[in-house]
Length: 148
Ligand code: RB5
Image 1 (cartoon, rainbow, N blue to C red):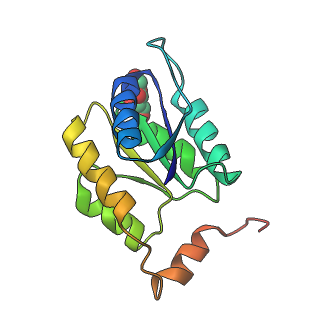
Image 2: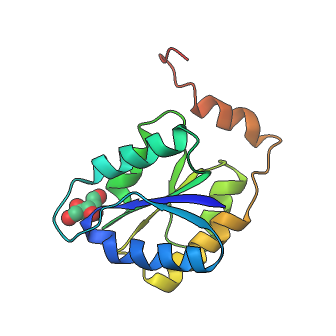
């Protein structure tokens, strides 16, 4: 799968480890930064990830920051993004099955590398369930007051 990954400075090490693991697992990975330990603003990287996916340049996104909260909020500002902040695999799987989540967010200060891999494995392996979930997911792209 073609996957884009982005983080702020707080999750740079987790991003590097997950990116390497995804590549070793056969995925194509676009690393959108950040690349150093210099403090950066998580919205910049959340918006960059959302734009990348919205442009069709990757199929799924991985968004990381210290808690996962800030960057997940940033990604979800884009109406085409359904970013799920998770810290265990059941939520990761249900985010795909029920919500057709296209981005997974995790917190590097909250979970370790093995739990992050387990969440990501569940996220990538689970298909959207469709059916009763489809009209609900469709509504997420058309919030009240939006032009679309
Ligand atoms: C950075 O210190 C931290 O605020 C950020 O990584 C994230 O946890 C915000 O939600």
